[in-house]
Length: 80
Image 1 (cartoon, rainbow, N blue to C red):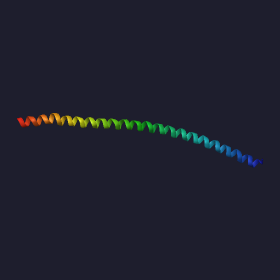
Image 2 (image 1 turned 90 degrees about the horizontal axis):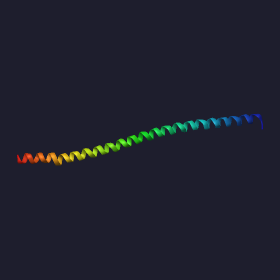
Image 3 (image 1 turned 90 degrees about the vertical axis):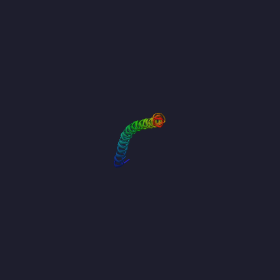
Image 4 (image 1 turned 135 degrees about the vertical axis):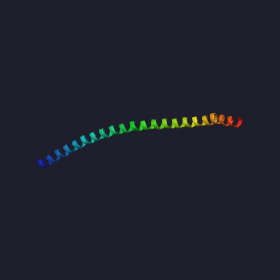
């Protein structure tokens, strides 16, 4: 092998090693961000479930109020 070819081969190997190193760091960084986003999404999903539950409770409370208190007041007004 010529000396020039050897140097080119060494540079290519160094370049590939650096590329692999940067790719590994990039993948670790992305992995961390994905984990953060997943945790954030899980929190949002829990909040959405709580909001749906609260909405259902509010509807049930309104219906209960309408069927109980409002109906009683109507009866009182009608009977005087």
